Image (cartoon, rainbow, N blue to C red):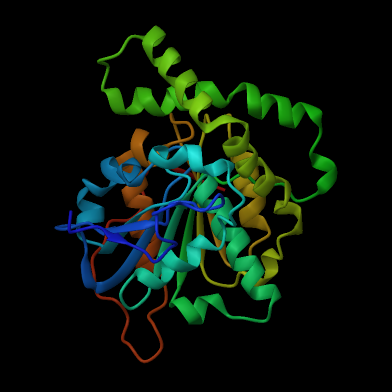
Length: 304
């Protein structure tokens, strides 16, 4: 990786009560080519920039756009600060501005996808055009949580999400430990991560989830690819399918035999899906069509 770029934020000396660690952006050296554009990757709750590593080792990612990965305020290393009264959504503007020339593509996973949709929605409702402002030409939304109607949220929705959070953290650990840890130890570590996130951190996620019925999805006009894991219990595929159905220009894909972390569990197929999506994007105004011979979608993937 290249040298990290810590984005502007309040100085840490004598931290104010509401101070939250700013995003940190890193250019992934040896991955991607700026001639093919730039991509910004946004991770989920209690994760960090390394959550994308398995995907970024795939040939289809190496030959794609220049890649910038963000460590965001909800990263694993700064979870304790999520209890502070800080507008996490607003931090995305810092990350977007920090990508030199702006990100043509934004790829966001789970809570990162929810925060991104909320950020774009706020901008659009103010009459701003975040796509032009930041140079965003397309989105890839991975394992998003989304419901169209407020009536779709009930007590069962809340309790099942909360009860499954520790198991979700253990799943993420399993995918990275390469079989070195016992199921019992993974379970214990998952509960430790859950406890580090705490009620404040988890409520940051769920509050954004509760606001998804208010998203003006018809205003999100750039091409979007929505990817879900077939066995995801945290963000069921039907929610991703519903989100894609309410976006003006969206494709929905499920990946077989994986859960909430398809970019890790099915990194090869995930890379092919993203590469195929990029290949189908229209060229920027005034530029010829992209001649790259990017891999297409894996035949093992389903589209809906």
